[in-house]
Image (cartoon, rainbow, N blue to C red; front, top):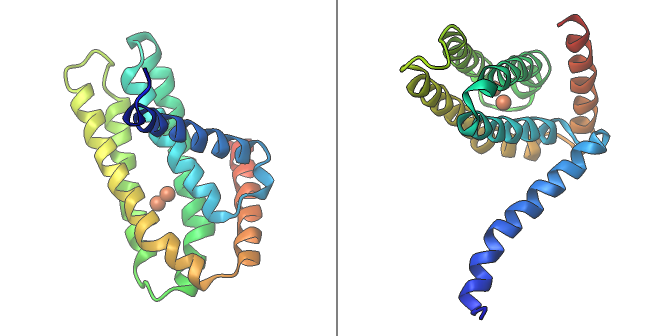
Length: 177
Ligand SMILES: [Fe+2]
Ligand SMILES: [Fe+2]
């Protein structure tokens, strides 16, 4: 028998699935995402990838980790080159550019340490969790303190144009990677 409580309990994961499916659909026609949409989508992808890596078989971990490391490094470069100068120009958040760069350096140092460890090293799991904590703290800083303020101060058209610029920069870096 399905109780009202049961329905509510089932709705949570269902709504999560729905949100994820709608994000995927937006990615497929990725042309419609603005600069913040692109960055938020990449943050979500990184969170999902970290869960997948932690849950994966030892044989798959290195490959999945390498893909996450490459994607995060590309995300960081695009933020630094395209997004951060716009933030500095429009927001009274002096120092975000330097804070973002420092956070990227910290996470990338943690990624490099992990890359140098064997998957079966006893330090791998604690190092992975430490890197994950650093990354999640940084993502929360951007999403809570920066993205909302940017939406308030920068026009929808300008964010669309910046999104195009980010896609072009990403395609360019993919070519040279
Ligand atoms: Fe960042
Ligand atoms: Fe970011």
